[in-house]
Length: 637
Image 1 (cartoon, rainbow, N blue to C red):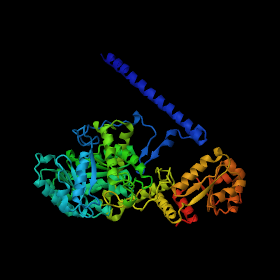
Image 2 (tube, helix red, strand yellow):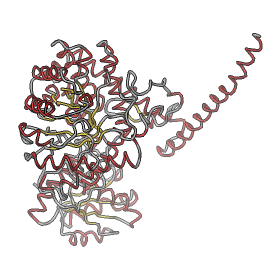
Image 3 (cartoon, rainbow, N blue to C red):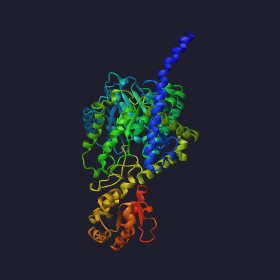
Image 4 (cartoon, rainbow, N blue to C red):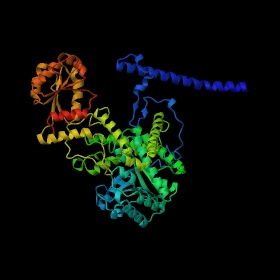
């Protein structure tokens, strides 16, 4: 019997070993193919590459998380529990209605004082697909005393409401409680309300808010009511808006959440009650996989906090996603529709309970918007409805589960965020980390790194530092405010400041600043670099004149035809530069050009000692600094 069992086991294990051997051979074949392509691209011998050449294709996020070019069964992690079970990585609610999916949220009342007008907008939106409300109340919005009028006709047991009242959160909560007391609601336990108090994150975002003591009192009041009321919103978007990477946003938000739990339990609430008073708001970006992993990781982090508190079953806090304000652009704002679509996709697939998509023109000043408010809001709303009702993304809970990449990214992001949370705790907790500047300094470093990547165009912002539309209408004003009213450090801001200078110049002179492209040789010889140069100049608001194929003799006429611009960019092949580069520089200066730039590296003119250009432009330059200097030379204030 022992012999037979051993033989049987050996026989059954043979196919498995063969499959493992096949996978190993396949991966080795892929590695060799990668090595061949990299060696050709880098013009080196395969032997000069690392033993694992695929590591050259790895990327690193701003959190320091490594993203591999290929994930295989070797990266497989243990299968996580089903949705609704600790640690809730796959979702907080196993019974979520797959016909509804996540809730489509929209903000109302910001900048509007008429309760009647806000109510009309709310009722219209509810009829058009909105299923959750965020209502701004107080300063610069609907008066607290008019909250009942703004919510007239809204079935509060069907449409969850979160209040955004800032410093008037206490008064708004009392008004909402009074409204609930006057309503006849059959099943009060089905009413879901967020009071939106968040003094800790409000402080970081420099937003007015109530104190922590008042927040604790609100939470105590909320626990006494029958409805599902959460008094506190931990708003992670304030960290994101200042430039935080995903793990930094999560770690700081979890630290703020822990500070609330400590305050609530110190006031006499049980851990279960304290955890039940907290919900989270996070930013969703156009990096769809990072966003998916972010919301999955966030749930595991908070579940771990609940577990340590002895209430693991209470660790499933609601998550509200808001598409990133920082990623929104003022230039070519229509591209924002693509960004918010990816963000909403990532948040929905990642398991967010509700999602708010910002209108595509949210970053624009009101006087620069070219479409009606109702149109941009409808487009934002329909973005989610298409994902839900046509793509059916809500039909499956956690569709990314099992993906080697998504599971690995979730794990790494969670570990990195937890490490940042521990760093905050080690410094004395959230309050101390806020006062000492630990959080702000860490986020500032990430912002500087991202800004450098965008300035050097290592990170593309379509319509801004890549493929800019210089022909679009000049903006009537500048500035950007997020949906919550806090200052936002937008990724595109530095390039858009250059475009603002160009717009001002256009308004004063009737023309944009202009540079000549000195295109040496045939189209085939200069096209690659002239296209690069034109795109670069346009990203700084500088128009370019391309006279077509030139030789040195034709440069003077080209300069004259272009109106004798102060700046010229020589574009051609390395061969043309070697033969005619310095002659072209001399000819341009003789024709009246004061600043000559060559599109290409300095080695293109190796050996030349006279008639050198004033600068070189390549893909590696700090484009913001270079373009700012060119605008100065062109007389743009």
